[in-house]
Image 1 (cartoon, rainbow, N blue to C red):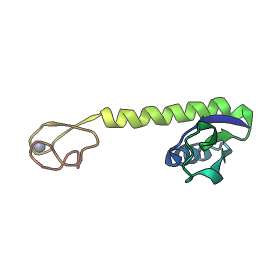
Image 2: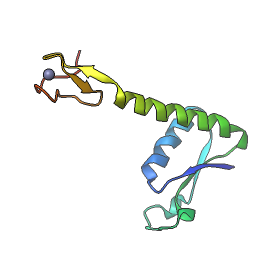
Image 3: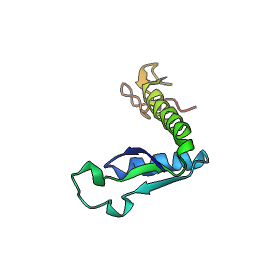
Image 4: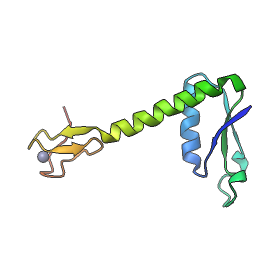
Length: 104
Ligand SMILES: [Zn+2]
């Protein structure tokens, strides 16, 4: 077993766990039982681990891949169908005219 990262926010742990399990990597979460308890000590934060040490590099690569996909998505610009203004990729309604953005 090898620890990948620990994070106070359990939703991120859960998110990356599903990413890794989806990639066929067996994971487990340490300190899961303690989550929900306010413990200000990083030692007790939930930690995402790979069960098999040899999966560690692949797990890290998978997580990096997903992290870069996430940021690429938010940096992408979409053009408003109504007025042609550029909007951030995560906008659904144009900031300029209120029209639908990127809806095809
Ligand atoms: Zn517009």
